Image (cartoon, rainbow, N blue to C red):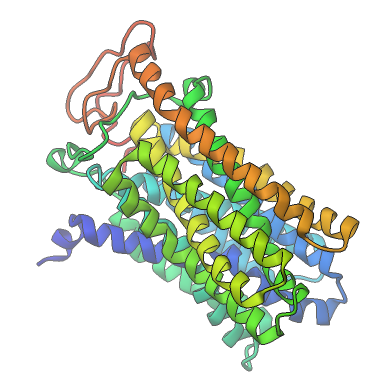
Length: 443
């Protein structure tokens, strides 16, 4: 098989996407750099922890930016821009002497670049996997979620080698650049017979741009469905170690439990995608919050009765559920609102999630400082799972009304033209699909 044939193989594109996601999820390895930076510059934990918050905000806006950028630039060009931001940010970190430089180089540059790359690769890959959107989305975000494990280990080895933390940044930047040079040629439009593939259980819905997507109840119901459970789960992930030690766990056991939670987060993503493909969108939106409700009650009981050995397996399942929730986002946006504006719609939903990721950990910390424990926090977590369950159940009738309003898009293409132009309904989008926009970009 020639190199050209490999590049046209959709599973080769998927593997390349996973490796790129893994390499470009640099921000999740941030905690490894905290000790040497604090030791050298005397910065406080609150100052260095803010770097991750800045990076996560940058991640959300980076994801959002690909929507409008892909209207005027090809996805390849967008990927080159994301690579440039990440490589420049990491390379510049070696020259850091002031805190603001860290926020700019690592927080803003790496955060924006990671978010842009994320959306480029989900958009590119899902165009090739119209029949397996859940599976493809799940394994892609698994690569992104496993960045802390793989890149964290690599960063730690480099930092505590003769290179030190400054050259560790340079080495990771060089690896990212090499990987990107290989990956860029795998960003391309699928041929018509691949673009025409459709889900087995869910017909592709309407095709809407972001400006109309945000007006639909089905969009906001899904965002609430996802954000409240992931926000609460993020707070558990952030505080898992101290939660364990607070109920009598040894540090070693707490560390092992947190590691299991991280693995669950990674492997839960492809599991969520597979579940989505197997049982369909509507059932997935009900099954996952039902499981989240059961897990939240179990975690609360284990914490209240101070049973670390019972709390630990619930942490593992919490990680799995967090990963499964994360995997559904791109699949839902593609199935419900079409392929053509997938980059924009996915980016908007990421921005909606960002405040929950910031606020929920602060709420958990505030309740801990107020009460001296996390009992109060675990009282409210099941309520968020119930809210997610309600929103998941309401998504089905909302999507039925959405399709009645605009008319169901052509199966599988979801508004993406492949050599033909289609007029949308008069009360719908009100504009023609671009004849050449195979998957909403010109790769």
